[in-house]
Image 1 (cartoon, one colour):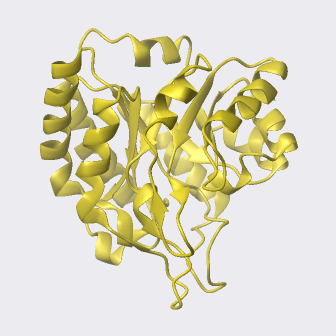
Image 2 (cartoon, helix red, strand yellow):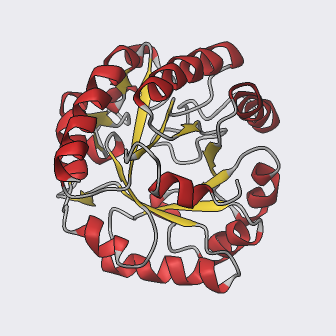
Length: 270
């Protein structure tokens, strides 16, 4: 992924970049189908693209919730997506000893929001030499993310992305403070808006996280208007039957229309 961060920020089209895909890797066929669909859209619209899929979901409300199809199996699917379509891939890691394992298959290692202060995890990710995307904790200010950036850079890796995903608002909701995007850009790294997880409604009594997917385009439009470098959107051809986070994913059929509108906003502010 040589100089990929520069490519993301300085494309001929002037567009934002996109991290998108299913919440979790559910199987090879559906992963390839989603990737093919998104790549057709992003190529058409000249949007730099990173395929996203979690090889394992470690943070679930209920012990019976879907966590994955097996680490190696899911990672090999991510590797195949990257190889067949020629796009970089990103997946979450949860513990330090997962960093080297996942790095053998993907281009970007993502640090989940709840783990963004875990020093050993950040350092392990940095030491792989891969790009490290750190999700801002729901419990943190944008300004405090400079310490995550410092930890990664001090470990010898300057390939860092920061992703906002809202702040805790009461017990069962999140709210986005858009002042945080330019503040984090001030740390000299690309900043992404997670348009789907920022609409989660966590801690539901059912043990299944809720969401407001009808507001995904609203979150995305505002992020582009304030100058976000990239967007993070989880998408699925059948969100109602997705095995993870279906309540706040964008239906795959709506992605092209959404991105087309966002490009118009981007062009208007350049």
